[in-house]
Image (cartoon, rainbow, N blue to C red; front, side, top):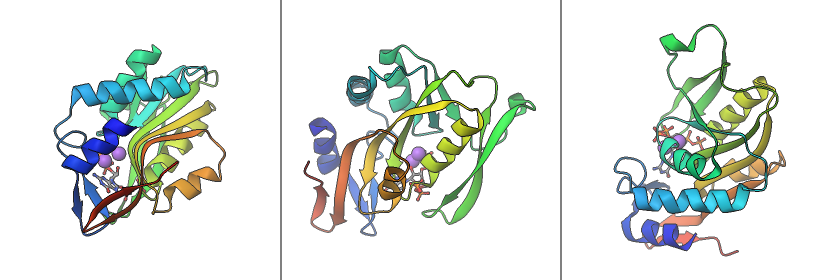
Length: 191
Ligand code: G4P
Ligand code: NA
Ligand code: NA
């Protein structure tokens, strides 16, 4: 997605040679116009996939997921990082290890909103080692729903996540694929 690559080049800040900070439009301040274009791109890719619901993870997955849900005309469910009082007894849990934060956390999804008839599109903001998306896949499987696609806003293709996901054979669409990060800037994979 050219517009997204341009924003990453112009506004992304590279930290420690492997982390891309995009707080100007995605992870802190959010650009609704860019989110709208992201929603359009995911919709274009997955509109024939019979998606009935989108599943993402709070907090940064929510904006791109909601824009996509608006255009596909389906609800968006975000997995929580803390057990909520309102989750009730019927909830699914998965374990996610964050390498950047060096901690292992659980994520939670209420059993009320997904069932075996659902065709799920999983959306997340970043794909690094794939832990978060693997956790979301785990939750959707516990609900016996079908995973019909995975949409990633920014994929760090030099980390393991994409390879792990490719082994599972789900349709994956990453809007920006980063081949490398360095002092000289961001290199995107040419497709
Ligand atoms: P993984 O999910 O792909 O395995 O990666 P990891 O555990 O390392 O990621 C932990 C958090 O850091 C996730 O956000 C993930 O989206 C984010 N992240 C990973 N690499 C980058 C990067 O290069 N740049 C940015 N900006 N984020 C990265 P989170 O903790 O769930 O936070 P949030 O969704 O509330 O923003
Ligand atoms: Na994030
Ligand atoms: Na995330």
